Length: 88
Image (cartoon, rainbow, N blue to C red; front, side, top):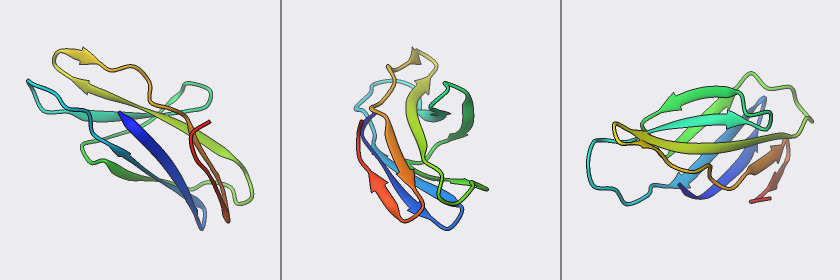
């Protein structure tokens, strides 16, 4: 997973990234918070994390997963309501 970015919205963070080139089974993506806790899974290269506290910084990483295994963690991307911080 490359180029992870985070954009702040009202009580949410919108994440987007570039899919890796792979041969083999279809990919899904796992989103993790800054503590390394699993947040959600998606098959899209854009997703929203909802229900977040306003004016709080949230950082995320994404891992691509298929039947062959998992990729390395993406770069971290962080957002605070009203601000965006790309790749830390």
